[in-house]
Length: 356
Image (cartoon, rainbow, N blue to C red; front, side, top):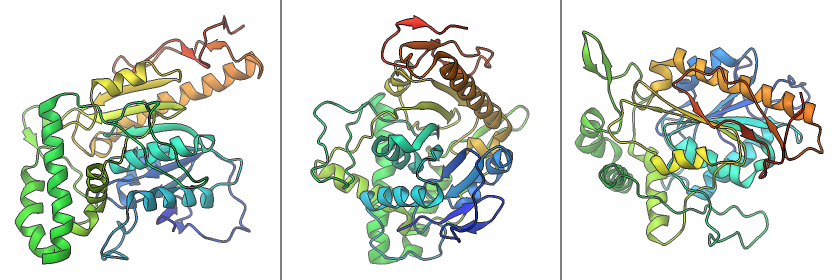
């Protein structure tokens, strides 16, 4: 199964003629979460299409009016679809930089964990609630079979309770929608929850007070779209460990500060601080879709992060392939809002400084 995917600038779905040569630009693979389709990436994709080959994607069926199957797609099916899709839009030696949002983060982290050789870097919006993989996490028994493994950190109990509450409501709505019908459940539960729910967040502007963000879901919410919540909690209650590992690459994490319920906690930021990779994070004013409402600031932070990756690559070339203990002292002229660890350690050791 392939995700519905469009290459920006060519506006053609995945699966086009492979005889057409692809541009040798770095690949930006943008994966949307619940409940968005490709259009949620319109503003960001336009900013990067000249320097990247931008491919935008959404979760299975989110670009359709009706689902392919009422049972939805379980977690392994979605992860498998991401693996197949990335393989379809890249050559064997190409890597992708993942740009993820919401549930796209959850599946994108797992993809980075199962296919680290295909991931150059990760830019994650909103969702970052995961610890590193524990030594006791089960491993796949069969080669080639993808297994989602994870363990949660509780963080702030009040925030955790709110997050679990709305997710359980969404999981229940998926089941009730299949029994009672999407329209009935949506009018009774989804719309009121969406309007007053703490999870979306609001924006505050001087003189105008608090208001809903510019961006609303890119299409109407339907209960059948809530299959990630159902399968996640079904598997969790069955004892399956679901937390993804920390990506083995550079990570930029951004979140909306106007949200009342956060999808990350201090332990995640600490994991980024202590990662042996080049990591950065920042809060951006806005709600769940801050990268649309505040797209200029978001783009600026992303460009700084991408520039630091180029600096790091140049330092690696200067150090030489055999100098695995080299430290790259990359540029430090980042905005104060963007936190990052300095210096960047390119390996697990800090043996010697990189020669200029």
